[in-house]
Image 1 (tube, rainbow, N blue to C red):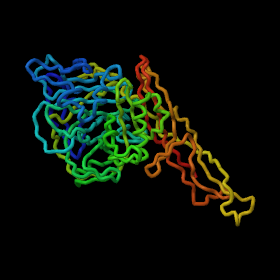
Image 2: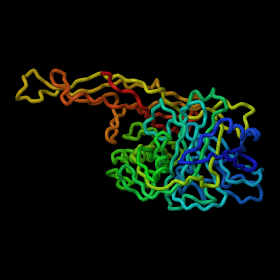
Image 3: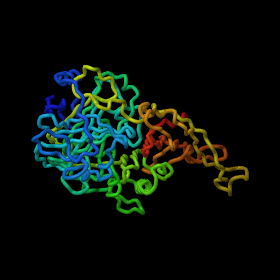
Amino acid sequence: MRKIKHIGLFWGILFTISSCQLENASENAFLSNISKTRTYLPVEFDWANIDWMPTPPGQARIPSPWMGAGSIISNYGTDIANDRFKSDGWELVYNTFDPNAERLSNPYFVLYNKYRGTLRFFLYVTTPFVVPSSYVMDGILIDSARPTSLLCFLGKEVVDATKNETQYSKIQHMPYDGSSPLATEKWYMIQYELAYDPNLSSTSNDLWFSIYLKYCNIQTINLGGTQEGAIRGTIGATNSSNLFSKLTETGETIGTGILAGIGTSFIVKNEIDKDTGKNRLGLNEEVFKSISTGIKSALTGSIKDLPNSLFKGLSAIFGSQNNQPIPVNLQFESTISLKGTISEEGALPVSSFAFWIPGTNITPNAAGQIPLYNKPLGVLNFDGCPKVEPILMYEIIGPINPNEASEYEASYKVYARYRSNLAQYLIINPEVRKIADVTIKKQELVHIDNGHTICSSNSFYIGLENYRHEPINGPHKYPDLAVRFTIEVQPKNGDSPSVIIKTFKINSKKEI
């Protein structure tokens, strides 16, 4: 491990990056590094309304991320660039920009949206570098002896709330304007959706996360069976999926990962035929069409109408309607095939950053920057994997063979009917309830069959029985189910609400 000095402002550590993963660093080594730095709060500034970042005298001016050369618009569009105001829920957490510091080297700041549970990291690279690479790769790691569910939403379309993740990595898409993804004097934005962990508030200051940046070369991309010449949506995977580690070992990988998108450009730029749902992302056409239609309806109507639409996404966040277009964040599970190389060395001038996690019990004598926003992160979570038992329901359909059956014989369609109210398992962050009304607008049981999402309030077809109530085509097949919540977060100050769609795994297996 080697130390990186951020002049005048921030403490940092560089984890050796190999196989697209951060090498685990011991707690003692981490504390040993940061103990040499005093405790201080970051400098506050009006990030949403400035044209130029706060820099010391004599240093070249740095434009804000929202406009001009090197802005985030080339990667994410104006809807995400305009999604930055305090009225929409954004809070400043960390910052290394300071007009009273010495010369700034690769400064950054971190925003968090308290209504959506979204963390955004903004880095401006000032150090010149040359990288013969095609894509930027980033990741987040939590290093602690204590298990936490903070990252369990990442890399999953359907969340298993019984499994925690400690690391998530993703390859960012190619900029929509055709510019190079890697350059100096350019802004880089990284976003992560965080789950609420009710145990973090009592956790002592042995819990931090590290964010890293590197590069990789990808020559061949296959998404859901569709061959593409470029990565058009962010490809993500958790450490448990091994998707990226296989790419490092063999130069080729195939497996299930997450195709994620930030902003409406993710849908608009990848739509081939709006009528059929044909797309460049390799997504099921029916699902893509429902998502595209749902987003367009939200843009022309009210975000409050979204729960009543035929939107079939399982993981999505729709931001405040104060911004047009409405900022969105989407995740889809997909079969992903990649061929290429991942550098064994961190290529960007600044490779890794470490932060105390807000909302934990950070002691007064803790070293390094203390977060300006220091409340528990995440909006919601789910308690475990509750079991739901079906009640069998029968629909008479008449004899299978009327020529051979007596007038008293009949056959039946069999349905498994489930209790559908699982709201008591949903966990809401108390800090969010203080500032917003959190309402479940829709609750559905979901079964995914061959890529098709089948939604029902509580009933699913499972097979046929004869008049003796014996299965006709073999044992009944009970569906593997999940519960999908559509949740409205309405700020109590009267601002426009956000909508979160989140799907959780449940235990629907029938005991024989």
